[in-house]
Amino acid sequence: MNDSVSASTIAFRVNGQSHEVKAYPMARLLDVLREDLRLTGTKEGCGEGECGACSVLMNGEIVDSCLIPVAQAHGSDITTIEGIASDPLNQKLIDTFVEEGGIQCGICTPGMMVAIVNLLKTATPSTLSDEQIRSGLAGNLCRCTGYAKIIEAVRKTVS
Image 1: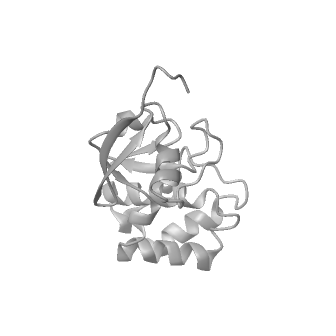
Image 2 (image 1 turned 90 degrees about the vertical axis):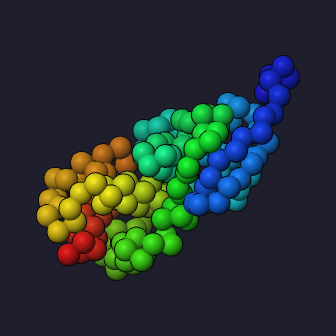
């Protein structure tokens, strides 16, 4: 780190709780979540914003936390996979992912869950098409499942 840049106090809400952390402004939100707040559910896949494994909701919008400088998150409301898991419908989604084999190595799973929860906020679950599910998962890469089991898990959750 450049010694001329000092750590700053960054305040934000994560999963409904207020937090203040002392961090370098350009530290990645991903690292602050994992290392400072010990919310290790959010995973690093590529570190380049290509895979979606580190997806979180920031002020209701899906973002790749590996691309967000923590200073940009100051004053924001962040929801991670840990925050998502507390909702009963989302827990059903997680359970269905396990039952349907939509989870294999697990690296992409938190980002997939965040993307699907984001999709379900705006879509009518009962009329959700496979194409809408694929579109909602855009930006999330899975190298293990081939996506069919993931789409089936979403379909089964909302039916």
